[in-house]
Length: 519
Image (cartoon, rainbow, N blue to C red; front, side, top):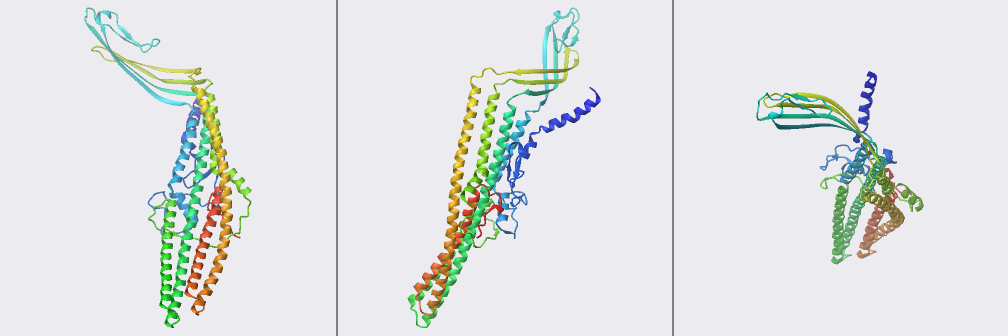
């Protein structure tokens, strides 16, 4: 072997073996549990989330004791999504599955490379021979065609037996390569599609988490708005009570009327305590979705109700087309169907022969000694090369059964796609109708709240001037309070419904995708 060839082998062979490292295929999986990545196809091509998404690497290690929470920080919806991506255990579980699927691709590709093993065999034997039969000595050989070790026989006249100790040590390297195996290609395609499906499931889990965080965030905002409404209602009932007390002092109201006014104040205080309890429940629900300790206290900044559009601008067909083209669950189902096709090819490949090449190289050491003597040894280098052609002709129908199983899985995957397409269409249609209905409810609630506020203000002034009864003032105040509460609930429901529509269409890839249906 020339020196230049040796140098080339020293460079190429290590690179070849290192290229077969299965862990290098971890690049096919999302880099972290807080970074959803959409694969564009097999082989690791992928498209990242939009730049508008705040989902990025967590600010610290993900732990359950809340160490990723920064004390004194105001958490809006973008910060809450970031915190959930770093803390929620569900996304981490699915991320680990995506990593396993990526490693499975590496394992499938590793079959393209030879295997190198270090092997050592050792044997020891002790034998006894009649001494009279060894007049001319004995020879202990390693193999029939190799030289061995010769030992002299016993001296003339010796009787009895001769003990013979022998040992053999054979260390060697074994190189094996499946030079011809038609199942490798289908196995790689199946593993790659499994990785694509796992990545899409991971992205779908992130979208689900984003929707859950958004929904609980808007509900918390509605609960806080209910507290504000209850406080305002309490102030108004106290004003009515003060008017009743003043009229009683002037002899214009009875004690019964004053007692009824005080009852209205007590009722408003009770409703305020209920609203505050609901706010705590909503806050705990948000912490649970975030995946942090529910006992923690976060400074959460919620949104106030504002103007929204009267209806959705885009037709329902555009949402349907987007959903069928980009929903992660549909993409994962399609990847599973493609994987099933690859498994059919894998099952059919077992009908073809396999060619294996095996080479070994090492040393064979033989030692022997007669009774009372010392060991004589011989060391012999050896190199072997083998070629094995295997063609399975009969296996009791196992191959036919495997092929039928693969075809059944392919049919199952196609039926799953059809089912998911129907589910996606139904979810988009329902979400679209609900979003339009929620916007209509909010528009009606705004009008109701405006008219109720005017009526309440007029009735309160009228009662203070003795032109209305306490029952009329209390009724107008209650109507105002109920209208304000309905408006805040309708606002949160409209934001949730619009977000649900974006989620159903597969476009909820970041906080920037959460719709704000302004007029």
